[in-house]
Amino acid sequence: MNVIWIVADTFRQDHLGAYGNIEVRTPSLDALAAKSVRFDRHYASGFPTMPTRADHATGKWTISFMGWDPLPLGERTLAQTLSENGYHTAAVVDTPFYVRSEMNYDRGFQTFFFQPGQEGSPTRVLQKGNHES
Image 1: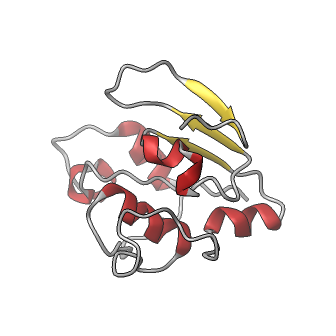
Image 2: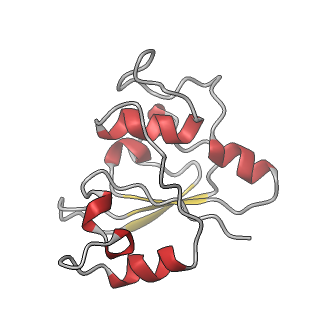
């Protein structure tokens, strides 16, 4: 079994063909959605990028106790659980906060692939322990 978790905070569900939009073309996401399990009633506690990512990583509504702070070292992450159960875990991210090791979002991932969005920085693969600050 493969697990692919796609998190994007810059488009809405109603802007995807898989959810009935016929004006916006999203053929690759539609094809993936057609053969996948979709969580149609999943919600995060906040809108800002990193607090929402913390919700996803921990399964908790974190905005009330951590805001934009680093993930507390005592909080278990989904990636840690998957990794400990034999899954190869990798993150493809465009948010520099994820890549900074002091933010603690790397826990449980064996590989990070940093693909900057509109920053124009070169793409690079970061192995565990080789993060840029």
